[in-house]
Image (cartoon, rainbow, N blue to C red):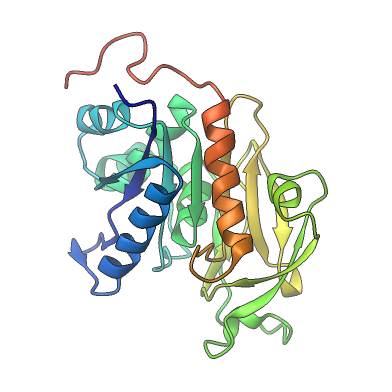
Length: 243
């Protein structure tokens, strides 16, 4: 049996209409190739509405990478049980959290991580702060300041970086149990990390694209290495999933 880590990748779709964008396929191919280059096995995981099916999916995984280019609505509210019932993404995220499965989300991924666990979002498109370069679609690279001692700080070592990203929504109130670990121009939250010793969970607002910069490749390689080194709840839990 292979001892390679199996890493879940979300299916890049417009979940409102269940239609996949033409942008998604080449992006997914790049990430599949990147994971294979790091001796990991990628497994594409669509968000499904049935909790038992979600458990069966996660039984096969060691960690999860959540990609995303399309922002969540800033008024997204995933606090109540109805939101879980009608939002497969939220159900997937909360099940990952319950299992303490290593998770790394970027773009939409940080937004989902925060909202699904009780945080909130805010729009930045109409942000009046002139230094906030998320507003400029022609200049998506912007500066980033990391928090000392955070995962990003340990990987990058330089507290001030240039990253790639363009979003119209950002984290507002941070979910309980998470810390802000990077900010962009104007104080926009660019990264959050779980404060729990038993859960490696990171969300970033920017795009860590392994084909853009070596630093981004280093970031994701470090996440995979740390997720391999950590232990978390057994994949099937105390009671076997009905797979």
